[in-house]
Length: 155
Image 1 (cartoon, helix red, strand yellow):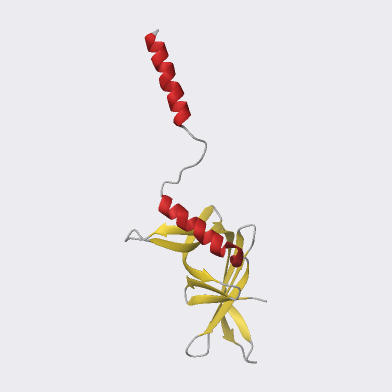
Image 2: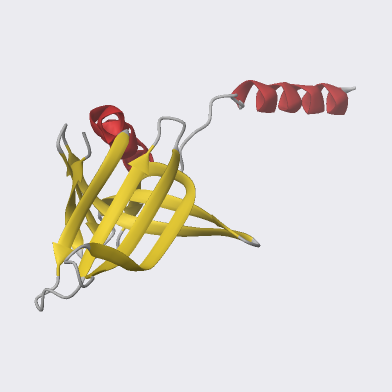
């Protein structure tokens, strides 16, 4: 009888100590992520772009990033060249779509680094892309999307 009571007491104690609330494995990263989202999440939505002519003037890189409120994105990276009439035409275009999120990761020095995480749908699976995130305001998104360090909001 004592064994049964002891086992019941242990079971009740174990059940009482459990919680339905999730506990983050890295409380510091969790807090930083919540602060990042609170400060910047609502400013991220919209369409962002930039272009950069190459030194010789014969090639221009263009990027267009659309971040939707439902957490989907479309990213188009293009290389343009001037035609005989001086109009820029696309010679190379890469388009990706998927889901996006703001996140934080720990770097090699165990410091937290904010990122824009793009998860691209591809045939046969998904590919994640971590882009260093600096900040965003109503007009400019500061990220490291080579060769661009900032994208401007499309009106």
